[in-house]
Amino acid sequence: MGAPCLLGIITIPYLLGHLGREALGILTLVWTLIGYFSLFDFGLGRGLTQQVATKLATGLGKQVPSLVKTGLLLTTATGLIGGVLLACLANVLGYKWLNVNISLQQSTVHSLLIASLGIPLTTLTVGLRGVLEAYEDFKSVNLLRILLGVANFGLPVLSIMVFGPSLVIAVTSLIVARLISLGA
Image 1: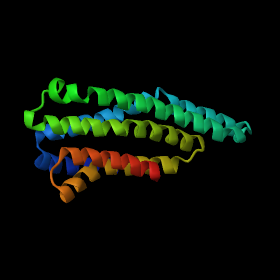
Image 2: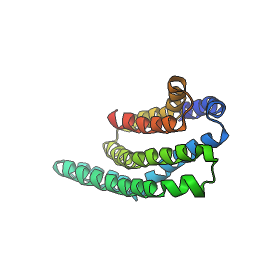
Image 3: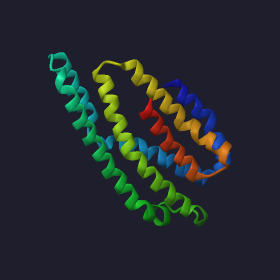
């Protein structure tokens, strides 16, 4: 996990210089929300790991596909609940509770709405990681964690380089990072 940390040390000053302190604060909040909502799977990812590993160890591997399908459906459903919750709160957060500058309020609301799309992706990722761990594919798990960590810092910077300083596009790049991790 050293590469994402090192990239964060390098990119955060760039993000601060191009987005400004307040927008970087919102981006950091989005990073935190997306990470925090990985807990919104309520332990289903870990439970899926344990159940799949047990089925594999006891020769009941034929039951694994159905178990994985159900587990991923449940983790995605809990993520959808979290995403809907964030989407419902986006306006009040952006316009009132977060106390952001008026010039940044609309971007904050849009960013939170976009971030709400990332929550089901996050919980689905947790479930898929659980399946990989059950199969003891720790190399892939660690590689995906590193790639996602690098993308979480690198894609917002790349989005600023390509599209200019935009909080909304930087947050969108975080959702793209989640989609990339699902496709990998």
